[in-house]
Length: 329
Picture: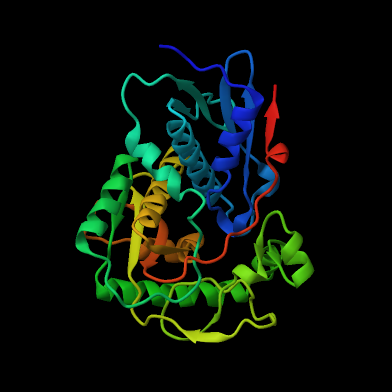
């Protein structure tokens, strides 16, 4: 196997793409280390960017890093390399989530490379979507994308969607009464034009989306009852098109698989001109998470709730500078 010799510029470009991945509260809980001697690019968790009250087990952190890992794979394939990935390679170093080497591909990687065009188009949307149904063939393609990464994606029926929306309302109410979670949300939101315009992480006020006047969309309200200028209120879809992404296991390896599957689904959805919103409020509370699963499927653990449809893709959220995310060793 012939491995590529990477220079600083190439590694920077790969990481720059990888960090477009979504993360809970846009905390961007990843860091990369490039080992020059071995040519290995490592992905590490950044515990300083964890959310101990919202994500005490680190499940969302691993999902976020898994999404960044998949985007790195896409970026490598786009440049003509075969990414060889070792997940959780050292049991004694749980913070080392993956090690990647890039080889000259013995086979084509067009399927991954084709997703690269969506890397910078993909944004999390917190806007209302049209009632236009997503075609069945597109749903099947999205489910196949999740399955290719070892996860399941299912589209629940109307009764289950309504139950999920009720669970989201319960989660939002519990969160609003939890001072530690309220404070944590405040830490990762950027209110005011000056803070929003200069932010390198977190969710700026221009990405909050409008307030929900009517409808049942599963959208987190980052304003949390705080006034936001010029935000407005609009009608959301009453019965949103939701999808559940999940796994049969619930451990760090499964969370990383979920993150890779999530990003594969998101990029493919973007290629189909779909907008996607992410919802994890229900999954952040153990007493509610169990009720989110579909008992008729093999999905034992729901890892993410997706709202999919046709509508505004939403603005891009800020990203940290690559030089603050990658280290050359």
